[in-house]
Structure formats: structure tokens, C-alpha cells
Length: 108
Length: 115
Image (cartoon, rainbow over all chains, first blue to last red; front, side, top):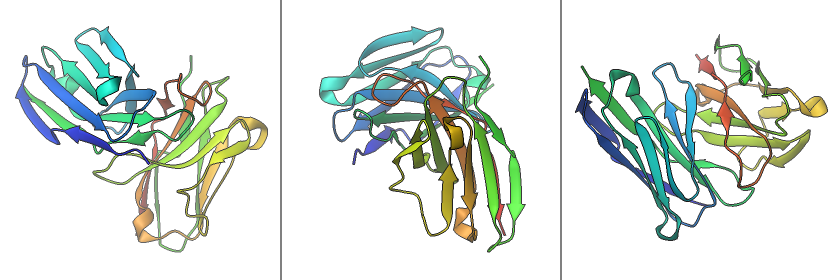
């Protein structure tokens, strides 16, 4: 099955900093999603982005499907951005496979 | 739209006991998923339903786990008997349909502790 690798595993930043999170896939996917898991455990869907670039406020994501990777950008970080960020991918109707996550800590 | 509802939020049981979790997906969502998330790891799919049929249960420990989605709406996941290693958060998600074109919406999860 598909293997999903996320980097870095941990990231600690000061409020206001920018960050880039990366997700690599072992095989091509046509369903790629980014999630934020808040400190209470809730998984929030950030982007459905099998290819191209999308932006939502301070967050944006880019997927280069031909090179099997995706990037999540967070600009002007806030403490509420803290949590674990997961990417997940699937091919067709196959199950969505999650990476191990990047734990982001934003200090005031 | 209302989100994915799950209950209970927390459950503590002794090993060898049984437990059941409930999930009500977003109205109109044909596909329902149960994921297990062990502390420090990403979620792992246990079972996927399309309406009331099972699409994928390849990672469901069928000797102790069972799930059903009667009438193609809400779903129940059961563990009997529970083991210590079943301690995890059980997440339910739904999507409009299966396939490559749909994002997932997750519920708040049920945190299970087996002692």
C-alpha cells in the first residue's frame, strides 16, 4: 500500500513566524488531504488538494502530483495553530492512508 | 450542516470487557469510516462502509472487533473482549461518496482506555 512520510516530525516556532510542512508519497495518489488535529483531538479538514495550489487565509497548500509530494504553508503563525498536522492520501476508492504527523508548537 | 456525531467521548473499561461506540455521519454522506488512532500515531482505517455495505475491513481485527451500519445511516463499532492494546481514540468520518473526489469530515472521537 501507499506509504506517507511527513517532515519535520516536530516544529517549534515563535508567534508570527512562517512554516512549511512537507508530505511525500511512495506512489501516486489522486486523493490528498491535509488535516489539523487540535489539542482536544479533533481532526479538522484543511484542504482537499490532489494537485495544484489552494489558499485559505493564512494557510495554503501545494501538491505536485507528478513528483508525489505536497507542502502546507502557514504564515504569521498564531498560538491557535498549535497541534498535529496530518497529510493523507489514497488512490481511487482505496483507503486514505495517514502519515505520522508533524507536531507544531507555536510559542507566544 | 451538522457535523459527524460520536458518543461517548470517553470510556474506561477493564480488559476482557466489551464496549460499543456510536457514530452518526453527516446527512446524505454515503461513505462512513472508522479509524483507530493510537497515541503518537496517525489514524489507521479499521472499516469503510458504502451505504450499508462493507467496502474495506482488511485491518479490522475480526476476532474481537465488529461493526455495522444498519439502514446505511448511523454505525456502531464494538470490541469484545477488549485488550490493553485497544487503548486509543476511535474516530468516525464520513464523506459524500467513496472515490477520489471527496474530502472527509471527522467526528470528535471516542477516547478508550483499557485497564
